[in-house]
Image 1 (cartoon, one colour):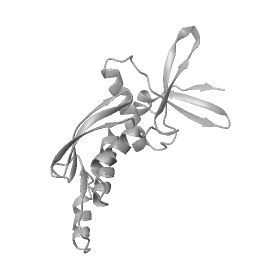
Image 2: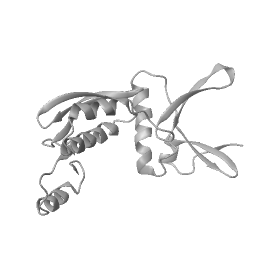
Image 3: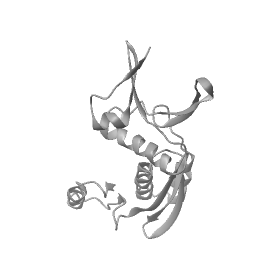
Image 4: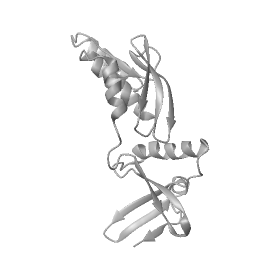
Length: 181
């Protein structure tokens, strides 16, 4: 299984071709991939899309947050196909997956004066690259007619919880921070 969108895909494909492997499948957004995402519309509880599986268009639904999950699903379908599993069965199983703790689980919290906020637990993500997806998800939801969002980054330590607005942090490292103890 080769991620067709990866910058090293040509090199990986060349290595597989020289390895004596019986077959090779690639997946992703790249035209010509054996399992290719054709479309994906993300919503508040996952998304729906269409993929081309070896020339057969297939619709799918995911209950996992983030458009990147569609590419992950294509990888699973490619692996299932390579193992001889019907892609329909793989997509049925993927449609039942739910986010696990620290990986995009969302809940609502009641604040004073009746305000309600949505909290998305992305505590598993620990580096800037992995945080781009939840931040993109947040800004995507704002544009889809939902309430305006102001993403915050929080850090827990022995001295308490430090919270900072994330958008100013990306522009200016000296942005103000609030501490909650």
